[in-house]
Image (cartoon, rainbow, N blue to C red):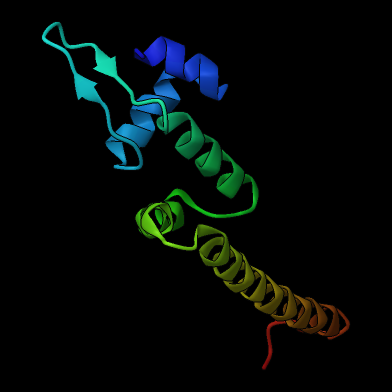
Length: 116
């Protein structure tokens, strides 16, 4: 299918597909007239990318893991590990932000908040 048809099937814009292709997340074949043609399984891949983005993964993170996941013998387990790792990272960041908030609240009560 051509780009417009795949974009519609994925509920994304043509520009999104072009951007994903530029980033190396998806691939297309070019016909003699220069039109992009995308394989049917690309829809599933784009939906995976969009879901991963909603779950807080950057395109860089997605790009570094998508090939491994796509070719994994046990993709469900690989995705579960990836999600567990992301959750651990988020929980660590939340703890760091909580400590930062406490430090800021403490400093707001001082005469000169930037003194060590």
